[in-house]
Image (cartoon, rainbow, N blue to C red; front, top):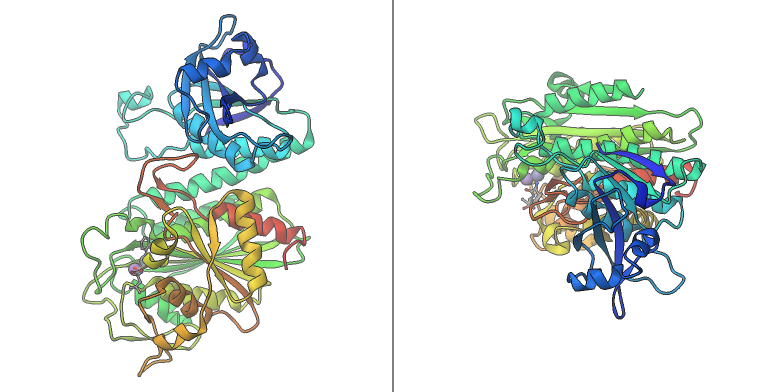
Length: 510
Ligand code: BES
Ligand code: MN
Ligand code: ZN
């Protein structure tokens, strides 16, 4: 990952590959953002005019490269768009900084070192720029050419930006240092979640995922328990076993327990970890299979969030549950028409084997409930319906408690994750009535994301506050990179979960 430093150095004397400045969209053309004064002066105060000549407007996502002014040791200035200039006296929005820093870091792939002269009003802004750099510089090249070219960073794609100095950061200020450390811990784990999502499903089956979780947990003092297929059978985890039964790779349930001696609250995070979703016997048609390695994004997010909470030493107990299975068709696969006896004791008629996420989550939610945590949050690439409803950048939030749903929504907004509250309309429950079992795994087609949420609700222990994040849209970016979001796995949900753990530790949640 890109190495970060806080720096008080002046831009002209820096021996770096590029100086990054911010440019905003003002009423009468581009405006140079605070933090870049020294650069602007070296252009005789004409930087905004020079940028306008080059066609820059200050729009979000815009990157303009220009030769550095004379007297500068760096050869290049990179002007990155911040979007609309804030009202007078208002500062730049943390998310605008995060996105701009991400764009700049991406544009600087292949460079060794850059200095970021973006507007930093406080430590939180420094944290946002740090996150933007660390997330924007991410690349996944584990399966690319490892030959001579790649070693020189000239193979299949450029090496990520090596180092970033945040100018105007205060290296001796505790708040700035803490913000930077937090950004590094969260983004390192988030990027690891992206790696897991991007890893092809022939290399990441449930067993492999569990082994990675086990190793990381040990490294960070997190207690880990892995239930293999035998333990799952003994325990009666019919949902996880039913989904995994068609695969040559057996399912796993991983429990990660981070405990803090000063904790007053206990949060449980539950992640859908379908390492590949073919649909099973209800096979997905061609065109819907190619990206289904992303169906373990929820489990990857939970894993990352628990490890980040441990690294940050948050004063809260967090238990992560990874429900890992591969959904494949075969002679041993669950059939449409089968009835599964779930861990909770309820029976489920499987009408569609492609509605598998709710089956593995049901067992994990019930397992999580047995510890009576103060709240449970599950994260899942659960339904195509949620993608239709909210698009590919926004996740849906459902809950059995309106106040908690609002709190999760606010946490998401605080960290710059796009999310939206969704309802759980009672009348949709009867669509899942089954003639043979307690409930069917499918209901009305309309409102399919909410139907799935209602199904999950049945497997949350009595009286436990619960929220469900359907990240099917934002988990995997099939379009081009934007802001600090790369193509492929995005790490959706991680920052919201970490924020929830922080808020809970601070006593500001529930
Ligand atoms: N993993 C899919 C949902 C999904 C769709 C994730 C698009 C990411 C992108 C899930 O298991 C699924 O197949 N859901 C079905 C449910 C249906 C059969 C009730 C769906 O949404 O079509
Ligand atoms: Mn499916
Ligand atoms: Zn799925």
